[in-house]
Image (cartoon, rainbow, N blue to C red):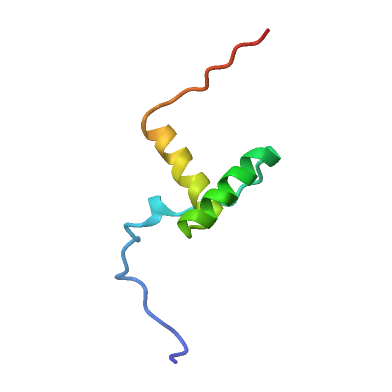
Length: 69
């Protein structure tokens, strides 16, 4: 390995917008159970499934239908 590297000609990564950020979110036990069972069926980690679902909601600009009684 070199002691120093020259990054003066480097370019920003085009994938920077695709990076993920770790957040803390409180989800219901039933929601977690649902996605975990779906994860077992599909072989995909449940965190990935939750992220895919939320991405789909964001793309379609879905808004929650909340009715307060």
